[in-house]
Image (cartoon, rainbow, N blue to C red):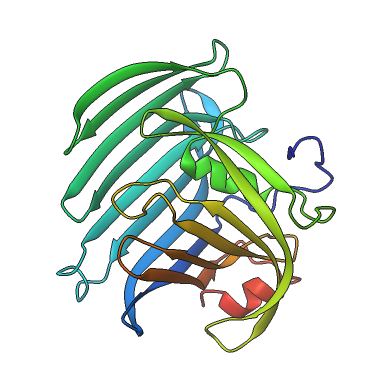
Length: 258
């Protein structure tokens, strides 16, 4: 399924959007407010191109750092027409594992130049060739939000080609139907529900799945994300939304930063 074969509406996000999540960790039936994750969109000039600048920051609470310290930052410059990434950076610390990645995309020759500094694997420089449109993990999440879900059938999948850890990976995201959920704020919302396999690494094992509930409105904002991890499980709830304000959106009204 392609966004551009079904593009009957404007992108569900705009420059200036910032959404934040509170992440809860569960171990032995105890839920802990463990981390914060933020996503933002802005306009930027990169090599004289007018692009989107996407940024995601994740960090564990100081009270949780002694268990598993997380300090993550992802950034991507991407086209405003098809969200094709131009430059992607990942700088993460998850426990003792540290990674610093840089990807440079050349869509005209269908190649990605990669530079990886991994505390476990060492330094790697490579060139990856691709044939179909490909995204980094950050632009993939925004591309997914922009898909028209209205005509999807339960069990149907969305395939998104991504590059992760110097490898091309095809994400298969399965539509599980529509569902009304009760949020952490005790309010109920209509959602589209999806699941996908997580990528095995320092947080997820090979059997981990990620389930996400997307707001059933034109903004397609993830309201809840749930997954099992190597030890225990996590749930992330939308906690705040920063303007651009949308007076027609119940979702944004309920979570709007004052």
